[in-house]
Amino acid sequence: MIPAIGSYAVDTRTDRVGQVMGTVGGLVQLRPPGGGREWDCPPDALRPAGTGEELRARVTEINRDRTRRLP
Image (cartoon, rainbow, N blue to C red; front, side, top):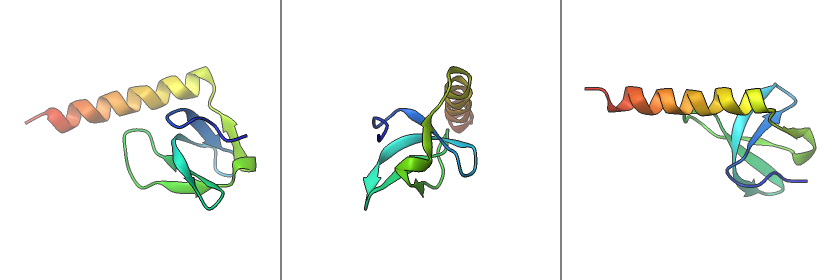
């Protein structure tokens, strides 16, 4: 099952958390929290992010947004 776009998932091959951005060629595209280069992951190597993992990802995004706004 492919996670919903915008949700967080864990690439079980690397234990990296990413935000689901879409699918291309049967692969799920994940973006690191706070931005960065997307990577592709087969759907069978994904699991939903746990509550703590999602919270850490959201905090990372908030912190990155704040530092981008500083003069």
